[in-house]
Length: 275
Image (tube, rainbow, N blue to C red; front, side, top):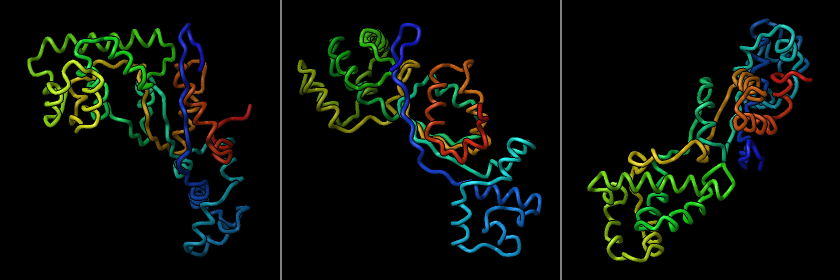
């Protein structure tokens, strides 16, 4: 956790899921210059006059160092060859506020936990509360769904969510039908007056499809986001340059720093200038 401007925040967790290696990038660069014979890597020398077999492709992907890539990255600034290397990260516990900025980096593949499909527990807690705000607040606090860590602050967030839902409930006649799967509507009468039992039954029942369409307006930028992202190395260089910076939003800076921490040195040597 870290305190920023009087608010305690949690930091994201990142795991490197896969990386493709730098060997293909060197092969691409050697192809540009027809300089296979100058490589310090034997398998690159060999493929000047031969097509690689499966074992050689494995050897290419296992290359750990390339003098040529270092020269191209830092002397000649020929970065297009870095696009042949890709890294995929699993990110958990960043925020929707970060997601808005992260998505501006267009050269990436990104898959994000969908609020359209994953809000059922929040809506179940509201329906089961039957107007009891404290029941709703306690339930949502248990979900650990915010990057903000101060309980008092999060109670304000959740209270606001409750008020938005309560307001919406007065505006639509079929609120329960919108909020709960048809097969679970009977629980509302069966467990009337017993919020915990109703919540448990709704949780165990069928989830309402696309429930977030009607209710995602209640959540703020402080809600946690999980995602898998894949960058090519050139794009990752741009990401680290812009986001590991004092000018960057502090939450995305934390994310960039954690992504950098799990990125192997053979990639960092080509994209992060040594101080």
